[in-house]
Amino acid sequence: MRAKDSATDEAPIAVGPSSSPSAEARSGPSAADGHRPAGTLAPSDAPGAEPRFSAAATRPSDPPHSPGPPQGSAASRPTPPGSAATSERPHPTRLGPHPARLGALEAGLGVAAFSLTFPATAWGLEGFGAWSLVTVRTLLAGLLAGCWLAVRRVAPPERRHWASLAVVGGGVVIGFPVLTTLALRTSSTAHAAVVVGLLPLATAACSALRTGARPSRTFWGAALAGAAAVVAFTVGQSGGALSSADLYLFGALVVCAAGYTEGGRLAREMPGWQVIGWALVALLPLSMAGAFLALGREPVTLTVHSVTGVLWVAAVSQFLGMVVWYRGMAAIGIPKASQLQLAQPLLTLVWSVLLLGERMTVWAPLTALAVLVCIAVTQRSRG
Image (cartoon, rainbow, N blue to C red; front, side, top):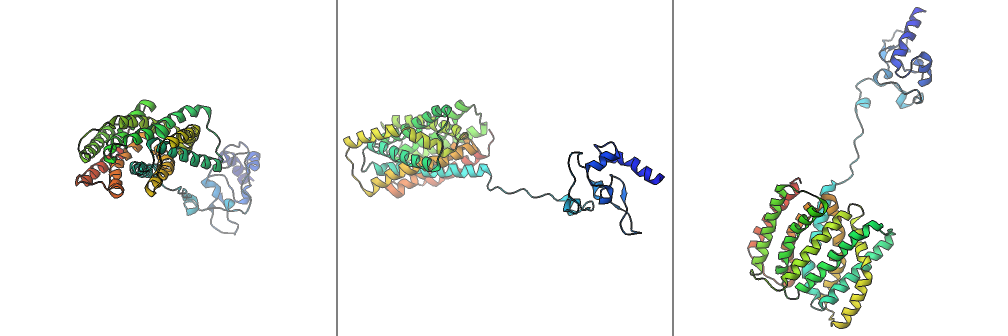
């Protein structure tokens, strides 16, 4: 009788939340089911067997309000201390590529799409007037975006988003296409690439002013070096001469940087394809009216080049490229995503050689190597 009394006297000490043997009985299975107070020995069912530690000795007891595991389940079976069942944890599920790497890939796809914009615009100008080309590309892109939004049944943006969408539409949908198309009437694609080479730096500066971002000195140094290399190369390609189209190009630089910055900010609150999609849809009435007036005043010659150029700048440059570009900016940040555009002038020059017959100098691979180094530095810098 004294042995039983001593066992019950020790039980309240090991139960935890309970303070009496009756509370222990309410909190879970009894000691006969294989659950003993921590630090006590459980006799084996077989006579003469050596004592063993119970499973309850390796973990705290359940709270008074939680029922214990069902008798005979895997959780109620005693597990030797240190076994694989108690030491291993399930491996976390792999969810795919790192968001930063995926964002860099998406921004890179956007740059590849934009690198064909100037050559495609030059093709389009072979059969369309400048105003016809701009309004038709905007109209077609708006119809494509509207169909996509309707198929996906996307609700309209909130009222607070429309101001940012207006900036995106004014800079990316209207401003940049109009100004660059007017410039390409008299300027070559190589000369226009001078401004495109400065666009990453302008976007990073606009982002710092708009969002309060403060990139590091290493970031700015690499960005300036990359921009200088691109400007030196593209100016050398064009003979170093400045044309009357420079005002159009510098104006396009400013409005595009503003549109990229505002679109990148907005893409953090809504999907990037919806950002450019709603900006295009909002401008559909204006683009329809503009296309009607421009097509009535400017002659149109439908050729393979002109039709291909218009379709590319409408579907890819104006919409699909913007979708992946804004997604990339939202994932890796506006300043770092903008530095990927340092490669855009070089890609544009490659397409100009292949599609427009422009000549390429030996400086191209050297400049490409310098740009790639600058991009690597800006991607690794912390700011």
